[in-house]
Length: 96
Image (tube, rainbow, N blue to C red; front, side, top):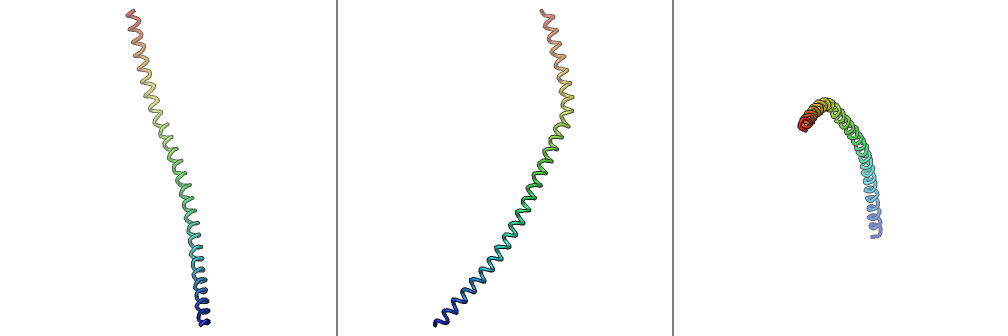
């Protein structure tokens, strides 16, 4: 009976060692996968940052591009308003 108990204990130890080795391999695979995914995430984050910078640059470029037209229109409007103010001042001066 003692011999069979020892055999069972040895079998259980072998089984534990086998399972340990399997888990060790699985753990290593998971670590490798995690490392790969982490690298991909870092690359994606860098790409997102680059694309956001490009978008900001394009938006800024468009803002300046459209503002040159706006500046011309604003100058025309200011000139018109100055003429209107001058006319009002002349009318006030004539009234006094």
